[in-house]
Image (cartoon, rainbow, N blue to C red; front, side):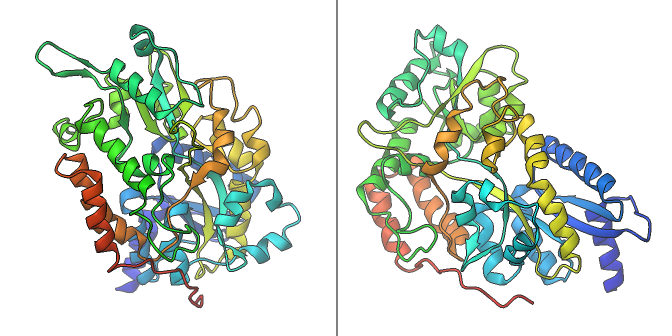
Length: 429
């Protein structure tokens, strides 16, 4: 029975192709859309050509299912050799002992230069002195895409990287259009998903005292409350942003579709939306840094991703060779050239591979965003706390049922029952 299950899993992971018997097969699991995985498959083809003794089988999993599916595979002893890891789900894998320490591989590989990566990323993926993930890209969620045609029509100057939240609000109000019956023709602003942390960080708030070593929550501080209320006001007071119910009524139309079809004048996400928006024909567009309150140096939502070797892999040397290639200059340049990713290698990020002179023309602002990024807390229970406690409580603000001060007070009391659980290393199998 187990052999049958394993055979089926290999078909799902590696597709229908079967490499020659003499080749070592390494399996890599990743999320990403069709375009991202097309790039990845192209890199796999190039790597296999240069390494004829290795076959790489790619398993693409939707992001929403990614962690749960991997944990199921680990439990069934069907784990891949390499997994794609984001900053926010390192805490899902490391405490379980599922990731191989990569520091020994870095030290033994003279061609691999860890000093070329953004130090913020190396620090994030280093736990107790060992590196567990080699960064591929850095992805601050601080990109305000804006519709130039809509700004021109409203008589507005294009936003600058140092604009304030007050200037943002005025622009959002001016961009919002309704018909004579009050139906929205164009929203002033939309975010890619519910992103209260963008406003919380901008106003000086945060979820925990130390994202790398969280010991307590800090949701009851003024910056947190102000950030939550600001987003709530965008929806309920100023009505420049679609409410959750408004988005639900649109069915399969997502927030990025609102921007792409011209029914949102501004849109918050990461740089990875670039390939999609480069297909826009009806208007010009560009990007600006996320706004900040006057007199404050705003922080932004951080983000990054990279590749780790599974501790149970039987082909760790081959897996390392592939990771070093994907995360090296050639691999990162291939991803950057599509506009999809901001490279984790500083030289590649500062090169024409990323700063290519194509839309968005202001992409260079992301180079300044790196030290401003705040990542999700490294707590074992963080994902559960966010999904079952924080988001449901803040939803009451987005729905107009509570003010931020009320919601946050209740949230603070509830979180006292669920303190951050620090990551502790588990002996690797």
